[in-house]
Each structure stands twice: as structure tokens, then as C-alpha cells.
Image (tube, rainbow, N blue to C red):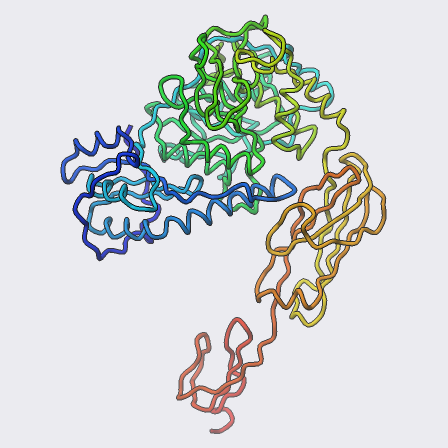
Length: 610
């Protein structure tokens, strides 16, 4: 299960200069036993790949934002900033060792503040002694596809009834972390979002377009968004789009590095957190390890998804029927864990059960159940397959969330969870339990609960402008926009606010004036010279969002303000030398001006006859 990854940090790492110290005593608590065993078996020049996790981790509890896009951008910024600061020293050291031929590969990861390192035993032993390193773990991990008993029926969970209301998941993007997806299947091809930000292979084996060598990911995606090309409707949310990242390589193996990279990609598919191209829901029908247990190595990744407003859905695992058979990451409290039932609502024998306290989980396990026995879904090469297991139950919930988000855009991850759990059909003993969770998925009832809750979506903001768009800060700048709640509940616009450079918590921005109490209103504000004076020269993003009378803050709109001050610095050269960027013959008496971004000649001594 060795992983061949490009050396993504070559330029910054190849610094060189220091000598490699003798192998230090490795703290037992810092190095996983499997890594210790591997290090002991390596020859002096042999290498192995490990995951070096740093102690400094991002505090995502401070991420704020009134919209999923704002939270996603804030989450990515926090994760990147923490990794950039925390990894600086160790990356310099790795660069030195790379120059000595002792480090073959070093791939920084920001989703979990770790570095995947392929190096000799003495280097890895040295890394384990560093004060900034929390752990050194093996890159080889066991990831089992969840594929065991339970049967699906879209009618049973209410999907067709939601379609009849005009809701098919339109406008929603779901992501698969699995073996890939066969993009050529007629039920899936037209639903792929497409583009360079819609497929990711961390192994680099199939970088250009989605593939699936096992059919597992294709099966799960069929239940989420599949159409009716085979004569019957097979997908929960046929109006949604999908993107995907592989977590299994061509041999069906996985690595810790690739798993972290896949989660990292989901948070920011195009590498620009400002573009908002992350999915709303992620489906992962697999588990860590070869059996039940609590493995917290991916909990930071899952927490990052939730902080960014992305709902994580995991298969509960297929290690039943005994109690205490939960698996990770499904048993994290942040995950929505899905068990499997038959068409008659009976728990599948192999469906994993609780209880579990993994990672701080306090509720039942699984969270709910869905059809997972003899489910018809897509297979490779345009074919179909019948699948059983929690692996195929989880996509029902993923598809259900896509239906709800299509009908109620902007619904928070917490509210999504409350809706599907609160509306589930109780099975087994009365109340929530560690076999059926809160019961079987009922997406129509969940839809009804959100609808009954009334207006839960904030106003849209359009026509945002700043006047003037470029300012020298000598006079105030006007900010205007139109807040419109007519398509999201029709409530009156009761407040609006703006932020410059970064979006803060709801209600913490600069208040704007609301022109009327109607559901559509102009909102305005003035940036005074005192505020402008604090801005550096350059481009500054300006964000605006509005609140309706129901208390919902809407999505953030964005424009730009350019600050460009006149700079009255005039000077002559000392000697016949031009400043940078100025052409022509220099003369000791020439006069130049700096305008804040460059120099220009304003008086040429030669032309003047000097």
C-alpha cells in the first residue's frame, strides 16, 4: 500500500545545510507501534511513509459567518493559516534533510495540520522527538467498503412524494468519497458537475476524469442522484449534481495521506475558498480499520466539514449483530451515521450497533436507518447491480439531505440533522435506541417539518455596488444593494450589514440603512473617510448580507473597493541611475515621482539641455 505522491513542497523544502543528528530515543507515546516495527526493519538507506501530525491545530470554534459560503471560506482560511504557521520550522528541517537524500517526499496537509513524509528511519525518529510533533502514524490504513445486508425502496422513505412537490435536489452538489464513479453511466453522466474542480484522485493514477475500478462508488452515487435510464427511478435526488474524490487506489488500498487530501479537496475543490464550489453534503460509505473501534484520526477533517456547513454522512458499518460494533468515522458525534434495514423495516443482521462514546458521542448509534437490503442501483459499464449493506443505506440519507437543501437552501447542518432525525419513523423499542437509532428515514416528513417551521431562509442580496469604486480616501464611499426576501419567505427586510476584508459573525458588521419594511428593499451605508484611512492601498472585498423579520440572515454578496492614494514623493537620482521600472537614459538631475505602485520620470534633464 505504498503511496507515490509528487513532492508538492520541493521549492520551499530544498534548503540544505545542517547535518542529521544521531537517532534519538523515540517517545513511545508519539510513534504508533506499527511505525516502530517498520523503523526497526529498515536498512540505513530504505524509506517508509508516515503521517507526522503537529500539535498545533486550528480552533474552528471561532469560525463565524451567516452563510455556508462564509463559514466555508472562514474554515479554509483558519486551517490554512494554522498549517502555514505551524509547519514552517519542520518544513525547513525537512528541506535540509531532503538535500541530504534522506527525505524522498514531503506533502503538507492543511486540513489536519500534518505532513506526509517519506524518509529514512533516522529522520522519522528525529521528527518524533520534536516538541511541535504530536504523533507519527503509519500511512497505510485499512478502509473497508461498507457492503452488507439491508434493502432500499425510494417510496418507503418518501422520495417520490417530495418529487411531486417539484423538489428533486436542484441546485445542490453532493460529493462522494469512495472508489470513484463511472462517469459514463447514463444515469450519472449528465449529473456530474464537470470541470477541473469536480474530480480528485489523490493517488495521481487517474487525474483527468472520474473512474471507478470496483463499482462501489458508482453504486452509492446511483442511490443519491441516479435517474431512470434503466426504466425505473433509482436515485433519491435526481436533480442534484455530483463531484467525487477517490479514497481507494487502483489496488483497492488507501492511505492516511490520501484520506486527508480527499477531505481537504472537498472543503475547497478549486483551491480558492472565495469561489464557493464546495458541496453541501458528503457521502462516505466506508470505515477505518478491519473491525469495530474508535479511530479519531479523521475527526478533525469531519469537524472541518461541519464548520464549513457541509453535512457528513457515513455508513454505520457492517459488523453486527452484536452491541458495541460501531466504526469510525461514523461514530464521531459530528457524523450522521446510517444503519441498514430491510424492505419490511427489520434491522439488517450485519448493521453495526451502539452504544458508542467515540470522540465524545453522547447520542445513540446509529443516528437513523435507511433501506439497505437488495437495492437496485448503478454499476460500471452502464449496467445495474443489486447491493446490500449500510454502504447502500447511507446514500439514501445523503440524497434526502439534497432534496431538503434543494427546497430550503441555506438550511444549517444542525437543522438538517434535526429534520431527518426528528421525522424518522420509530422502529424497534419505543424511542431512540442503539439498533435503529431514531428510526427509518422519512424525507417527506422531514420536508414537512422544515416547511412547518416557516421562513428559515434569509434574503438574497443583489445589485451591490460601491461608489466610487476606486477611492483616494479623501471623501466617503457609498455602499448600496437590494435585499430581496420575496423568494425565500416574503418576510420584511429588518436589517442589513457590511464587512470589509473579512466576514464576521451575524450582527457584528457595520449596520446599513433599510429603506422600507417591505420584502424587497434598498439597503445603504457610507464608509466615512475615517474608516477608509485605515485601509491600505490595494483591493479590498466588501461583503453585504441582510436579515428578514423571521430572523434569518441571508447569503453574503461581495464586491470590491480599490484604495489608491496619490503619492507626492518627488526626488532626483543620486548619480546617473534610473529607479526600478523607468527606462531611457538616466541623468543625475532627472526628477522622478512615486505614485504608490511605481516610479515615473517627470523631468528629463537631457531634454532640458542639462
